[in-house]
Image (tube, rainbow over all chains, first blue to last red; front, side):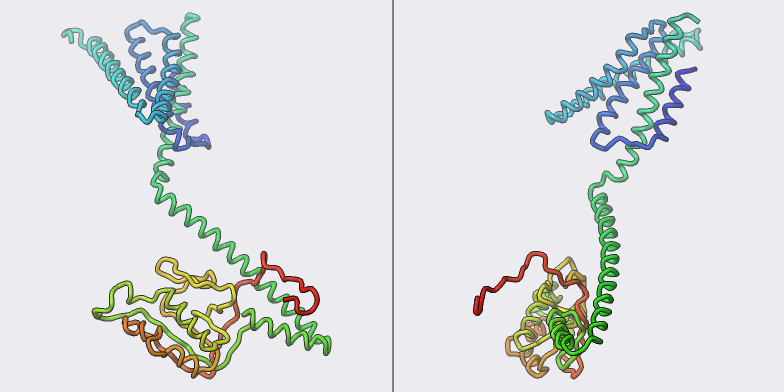
Length: 115
Length: 248
């Protein structure tokens, strides 16, 4: 419950704050968001599977974000789009997490058939 | 609630807060950046802003200039009332002003009107040649000056010693003012000589006419040429101090 309230407050704060990210940093923030989203998805899945660990979540949230942004930065320097690696990995993981959750939920509501 | 549960809730809330903040910030930024990401659009917008700024500045400066000119006029009136010595000085000032292009003048001369070629094109004509270029204007003005023109104006822009005539896109820039066809060149001088100079065999008028450009030369007893609208200031040129007689 509280996390959702926090999320809403964060969104409102982001919209109302009188500052916007300069275009040259936009890409780093984008991959960082992707990494963060992946962590949140992972956390939700882990919670559903009852093996959520706060330490893993927090370190993953910040670590992955920083690593993704760092990779993008390095990629820019090397003229290889390393940000794609982050996009691919986190994108795949998000789908995987969603698939796991989907199965969990379906199994919860439809106990008759095993999917 | 267990202690670890509270910690978990707080941490999750904090993280979600951060995530929401960054996501909405990024969304907003992308919208803003997208609007200005098209560099050409951005460039045009910037230029437009600059242009507007410069225009306002220009207007301000112009009004300032007018004010200054009024002041000068007032000083002159005061000095005119102050007797003989100043009268001689006044004449000199008037002379200098005419030379510098600061006073409106009139006299005999010619008015040359140039229009871009219209109608069907002959073999000699093509798009490049059927329009008047700044070079044509320069040649005509040069010809007029060579024929003894004393004062010349182009579309009522008085030509002074610092005047330039150049091509700016589809228009011509003279004295930092943009002008477009039809071009009217006024010259004060001996009207017959001026006309003869222009109509010389193989001269510029003949060339232009062969391209279909309409050149109309009118002799007039009263050609009125306005004063130079800009300010004459010398920032770099300094008068050389002469040592003794015949220093040169």
